[in-house]
Length: 218
Image (cartoon, rainbow, N blue to C red; front, top):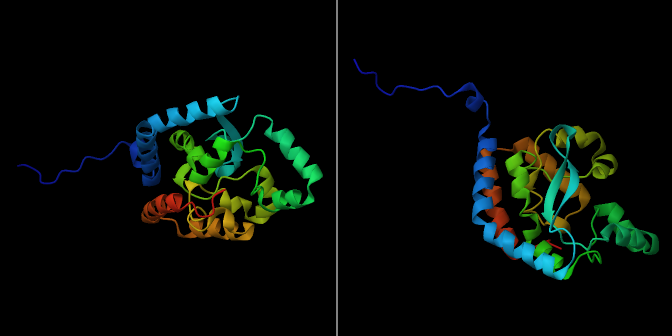
C-alpha cells in the first residue's frame, strides 16, 4: 500500500531556523552576487578620489547588546575624527545638531563621491555582508551606537536590542533624517511590536521607492 502525501521531517537544525533568517541569507547572498559589478565600480571611484580604505567598519550594538562592525563604503576623509572634533569645539550649532541626532546635515567630513553615495544609500551596500554574517537583518530597527543607547534610548534599550537591527525599516521609509530622534525611537518600537514576514516584504518594496525619491537622505 502506497502512502499518500508522505511527510519528510526536516532536520532539527533546519526546523529551528526562523523564516526571517532564511530569507536574510538568501536575499543577501543574491544581492552580493548581482551587485558585485557595482561594488567594484564604487570601490574604484573611492580609491581614485580619496586615499584610504574603501570599506570601513563602524562599531554598532546588535541583538542582545553584542557590538559588531557595521560595514559601509567609506564616504568620509580619513581624518574625519579630527575634523569632527574641530567642528564640535568651534561651532556650537553643529555641536548641538550632533548631540541631538548624531549626524550633521552639511558635513565637511564627507568626500564629494561620499555625498553621492549617501544620497543614494549606495554606501550601505556592504551591509549585505553583515546580513549574511548574522549581525544585521534586511529589515529591522536602526543599528545604533552605544552613545545613542545611553543618551536617547535609556530604559528602552533592552527592547530595541531584542532583535537584529536592519539595513532598512520603518525609519527608512518614514522620512529618514527628516524625522526627529524621538520619532525614530517610536518607529523602531512600532516595528518590534508589529513585525511580521509580510510586513518586512512591504518595507523592502517601500525602501526601493524611497531610494529613488531620495527623501530624507543626506
